[in-house]
Image 1 (tube, rainbow, N blue to C red):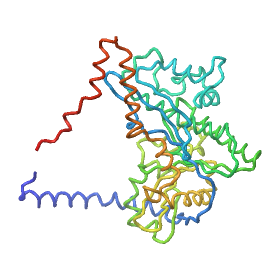
Image 2 (spheres, rainbow, N blue to C red; image 1 turned 90 degrees about the horizontal axis):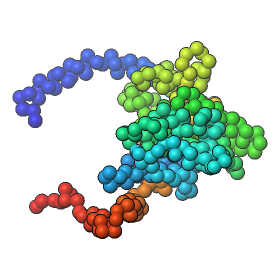
Image 3 (cartoon, rainbow, N blue to C red; image 1 turned 135 degrees about the horizontal axis):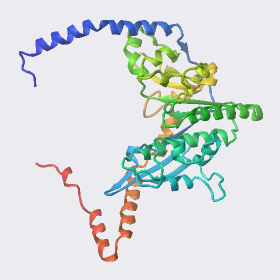
Image 4 (cartoon, helix red, strand yellow; image 1 turned 90 degrees about the vertical axis):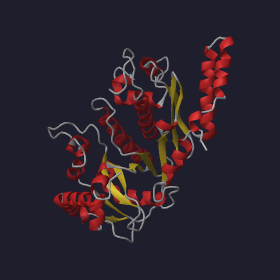
Length: 382
């Protein structure tokens, strides 16, 4: 705790530093000015909106040392389960790769379909993502199971667009931006191109439009520019609005500019745009200054239809609950994907039962006793 005599000196030091760094804020305000004239108003439009969401990794791990099981579950906003698996850090990734295919080599899961579609050879998870260890590597870090979950989410999205038909025009909303660093080499570029080809085929054959966007509550771009945008009044009160963020300004928010290099730079003798599939926009679906601003990626090939796409998103976000002005289809998918409360207790009991069955009969009562032990650290002392 500071002594009261120290506080005035601390205040002076902070104000001196803020005054010296004022030029940083001025630079951000100048950058914001460069796209202020590009702000557009959103008019609501109606279409089918659907979202695909993977269960949050932190909420779906079942632990009973030394056993650790990560549930992998992907749901859509209608409550349909699209993927379900359970893995642990010690899972043999070679066997996990084989589980994606039938005995004749045909794909059995969405992940298998994606690996075949992207030309992954050999079709293994380690070949698809450098973040997943091969079968010979000691897996001493549990983080790879979360990468597997993310790959499953990308795969379900791939399958939904590339291997399904659409009865109506449909807006597909991803939880998170349309960019990823978990794919090896140029497989994410191949993913983007397959999606673009499928969307074009659906329109030509069925005369149905499929739009793909990614929505994020948090972004380094928002963090960098939110104060300058508020000072400059980029989104004045009155209407829902959006603005496109130029790539050069987006790049200033990242450590490496490759994270902001989009498909438009393909073939320009620089490193290929391996991580980005969308163009970034900042959008406010509410009408007031204090309403939240989100980062939205629109599939780069569809960026010229931004006004139409945001109209569809607005219709879905107006009734957002419990998060206001956040796409309702995303929130519904999250509700369905959660494994909490009674559901989580059921799965936790399965861990106890599985471990119990590993023990000889005379030792099984030890596991039974663990179920009734209370956590004394939660006790309150009066």
